[in-house]
Length: 340
Image 1 (tube, rainbow, N blue to C red):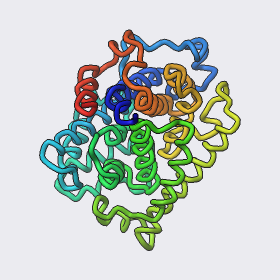
Image 2 (cartoon, rainbow, N blue to C red; image 1 turned 30 degrees about the vertical axis):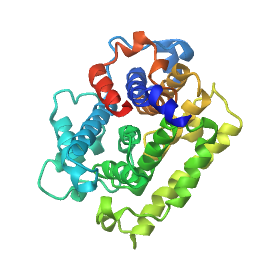
Image 3 (tube, rainbow, N blue to C red; image 1 turned 180 degrees about the vertical axis):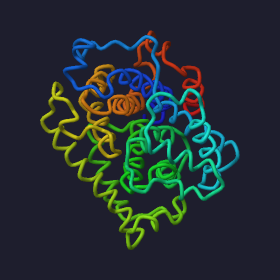
């Protein structure tokens, strides 16, 4: 039964640990091409977890978002007004942290600096950016039990919009959270791309005004529907490429050559998902494939780990890896909260 499987596999813990492990595995290979990675790390299927297993801003911001969700839900029913202040505070705290020295993205840095004020959050959002910082950190909202589809999608888009205001950043974050949610609840990997394409078409002209306010008006688009449909259309295009790639899978080919390098949100989503779907029952190989790419390897492996852990649960990660990951205690604490 799906319910029993969800409760016993510790999907939230598995997803969070997998996310951090992928991040740490891809940290040393980011900005390298595949030949350089192979020269440095050896055969990609045997890549070791670095020691120490440090993470990047991907995991740091995931934890910031997760703490914000926890604080908001401790205060009552999750909604945009209740979520804004704790997540905004967490992002600003991350911006000022001395540990924020793991090659963070310029969009996140600029937006979080602007969030450190009393101005409306929409003024901090970087409207031209659809960088992967929007969805590298969104997995927690797909893990929280008891949310409605509206709460999950709204919160996914809202957290993206705090920093990345481009409609594709919003849509890709929504899709990423949806994929995590479906995998947590027993969704089959073989059906996942089709389900996500249907979801994208269904929501193509749905602007979530309750969560986004007047964000669309800063874009130059004539209507909120025109604004958000631009983002969904780009995501549908990359989902089509992903679906085509899975018809004739090629595990030895750099996934970035198929669905993109992952520096932008829709490519990070699609390429991270491709790495998982190439090896849906072999999560370490999926992480290593994502880390051995020419693109944004830490973010790609981070997303791959989130998908794999949501699907397979906490027990799939080797104990000797999971025990060495940075922020382990907080990852386990949050996982336990949402596994219960």
